[in-house]
Length: 247
Image 1 (cartoon, rainbow, N blue to C red):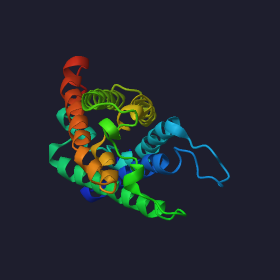
Image 2 (cartoon, rainbow, N blue to C red; image 1 turned 135 degrees about the horizontal axis):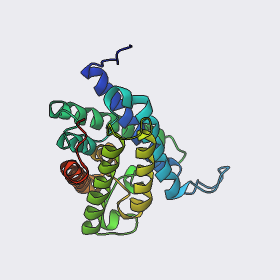
Image 3 (tube, rainbow, N blue to C red; image 1 turned 90 degrees about the vertical axis):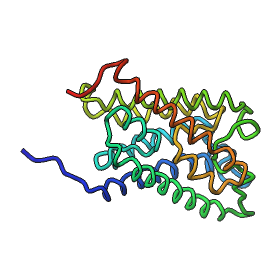
């Protein structure tokens, strides 16, 4: 019988950084470059809209889960890592390294996106455009207030963790976790892009907020705290509600 490969911590952290890079580059890149109407004179006149952005985020997680998940577990999200630790599915010892790798990968993706965006004729202002950052109040796509955004981010991150914990359990069907998780993230974006521009992922939020100006940075705490709270709730109650997966 062939033994399953063992990966070093450095290899697992590299996989997390790459997977988070891909999530931010693919998802936020679609929001920045393709979501809205294309400038006059281009061959195409209409962007992909919120529906396209939702599918972009889902596809990045789906493909990243199968590409990098076998190495690191495919978290690509500090809130997911926290939830898995609290559900006793992941070692707390590796939590800091995973979070750092995820934020680094997201930040590199944001920097690369900015370099590309600045190459457009006439220039590009990440502060004016929002640079796919998250927000509430006048920075919410539809003007939702702080309370609405916090509730949305907590609830949807908790649901996301329930999907992850359920589809990666030993009792679950083998091989379908990446598909289920990617589709869940697509649905989450369909619900919440109008509300908060969808975070459910502190690394995703930080990766672009660094470059989107002081207003984005002043609000990013919400998109760090709320997803972590949602993930923590799911991690703590999943076992008591639905049974542990220790067998």
